[in-house]
Each structure stands twice: as structure tokens, then as C-alpha cells.
Image (tube, rainbow, N blue to C red; front, side, top):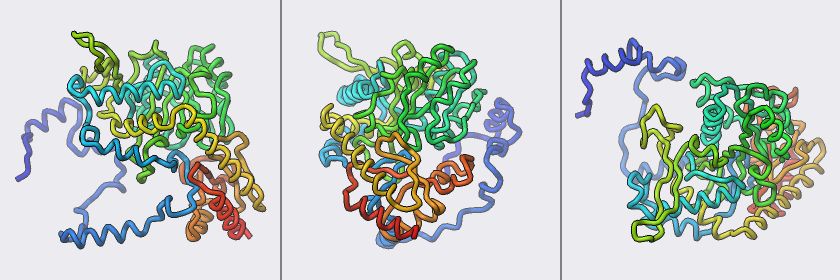
Length: 450
């Protein structure tokens, strides 16, 4: 028997309160072409053995990055995760813990979040960081909303180098709030173009390294934004880059938001991941999510508490700064363990390995006839233009065991860059790529283009 506690009168009263005529009105934003008109045709129940065989057959259709020469990036990066990370996070007290609704009874969990916040703040050179967000894209969307609250302005300017998925997530969050989004055309190296649209802006949103891999000096952008009363929001997708390049906080960013998956978290088909979020201390009351703090108890012993928790589950819904219902606690712990194992020197060495490997890859691909390296200042990812359609080329090389990269048009099918935009391929090299991987990529690419 289904549990349906609401009566028809209850539903009618709720619909009247929100101004809807019927339940169907709640789905008007879903295109009719995407709605089901009949029950899904599912197979009949099967035994465990049959289901296992079926799932294994499906899994074998995949081309795992670990079994191929993989040069995929574009927001999700393959890095080596020490075995000790998984060993530690699988301890029962960590693995079974969820959002600490009664945080004082979860001192170990709160301490782990406190350490995570400290590491994120140091990595990004910011004054305060929260206990993590759902992922990088939602962290950026929350940053945009926060900037509007702080400045009490409605205009947000997005650079043409922002990851298209981050942009679309921000659009989903911001438009219902009546915010104006000024989105600049896609550009390989155009972060500074946001300074032309600063009048009445709440914030300018730039990414470095951007979706094309370009590294940008954010200091002039920050100075221009501040002169006009706007905030600078710095986004990122590759956290390892801050082991080598100057962090956004040192360049004047007011809010920093991005993805921390590169530390301690495997690719896992796109999630779960972990969003980093940091800001200047003077804006902390408008920061979304939660903040774990250090204190002492009545006996003078060290302890941890939730210092700030402005989510809708903890305070009145209309006062909430965020409606994200959880943070990425276990993923954040994996980040903390990995960064602790690396240390400052290890992080710098890891970043250097990434950059050196990417330089080798750029040299190898640039030597292939017809290939143009488009990104001139990069960390471990860059864009190339090939004589062939990038999506077709990726399919060809995948058949030979080389995952050649991500076609930019796949991320932003509506983007209008130039007549050859569909030939742009985003490629990435990390410490997991060997010299043989790079030689194999160059060799198969040359053969595919000849």
C-alpha cells in the first residue's frame, strides 16, 4: 500500500497558495518532448546472477581512462590517488557519517572539516573557506548569488573562458532571482574582456586556468572591478594548478569557487565531487554552506562547533543563503588526507610534473602536420585545432586506445567562436601520462590526419 498522507483537499489548498491551477502547472518548464506519456518499458524481474551478468556486459562497453592513454580533462582530471586515502576514508566512523545535524556529537567529523577549510584557504590564499559545496559548478553559482547579495546589484558578467557547464549552472541559479547575466563570447584568452562591462556590475566571473587551459593574471581585472564597486569571482576546475601558479586570493579575488576533485577523488563518471568555496572575511555572513570553527569547552579543552550555518535546514528558509542540502563531507575528507600526505613541497612537485608533462604533449602534438596549439599560457591543459572535426577525430583515436580529449563543441554546442570551432579539441596531461602515452597519441593522431 502506498503511503499518501495528503488528501485531495490538502493538494487543492497548496495549489491555491502557490497560484497554480493544477499539478500539471508545476511541470510547465519541462518540454513536452521530454515528458513521459506512458509507463517505462522495463524488463521483468531477474535473479541476482542475471542482473550481475547484464551489468558486467554494460560495463565492458566503457573505455576506462585507466586502461587507455587518456588525455581527457575539461573539468574532471585523472590524478594518482594514494591507496592510503581510500584506506582511511573507509573507516566506519568516516564512511557512515553524514551531515552532522548535531555537530557537537561529531567532534572528529568537525575537526576534519576544520582542517579541510584551513587547507582550502591556504591553497587559494583566501581568508576563510567553508566546509565544501556540492561541486565546482554549484559553488560558482552560489558565488554569483552571494555577490549580488553583497553589492545589492543585479548584473553579473561572465568571461568567455568560463567552463560552459559552470555557466549554465549559474544561469539556472541566477535567472529566477531576476539577475542579469552578461555572457561574453567564447575566447581562448579573453578573461580581461570582462573589464569592458563593469558599470553597475555586482561581479565579474573569470576562470584561470580557463576552460581552454589559459592562465591569466587576475590582478588588473581585480583592480578594475574594485574601482567600479564590483567583486571579482575567480573560478577554477583544476585545483592542482595552485601548486605552481599564483592563487586567486593573492591576485585580488573576493570570492573563489571551483572543483577540488583532483585531490583524493577519482573520476567516477562525474561524481560525487567536492566544491571549494572561499571569500574575504568581511563577506563571511553572506557565505553559503557551513563553517566549522575551533573553540574550547567549559573545561578549557579544545573542541569544534559549527560557527556559521546559513542553509535552509538550520535557519528560516527565507533567511537562507543557500538551498544546497548537503556538503561533500567524505569527498572533502579525501581531499584533506591527500593534501596532508602531499604537503607543500609535494604539492609543488606534483604541479611541476603536470606542467612538464603537458609541455611535452604540446610539443609532440604541435609537430603533427595540420595541428595548431591555440593556448599559449597553460598549466596542464590546452586547446588545439585540427584539420578534422574534433568529435570525429576523438572517435577514431578511441578505437585505437587513445582518449584524445574533449571536443569543445560538446561542452558548448551553441558557442560561436569562428568557422572552425568544431575542430577545437581540449587536451590534458597529468602526472599519470607517460612518455609512451604521449608518443602513442602523436603517432595515432598523425596517422588519422594523413
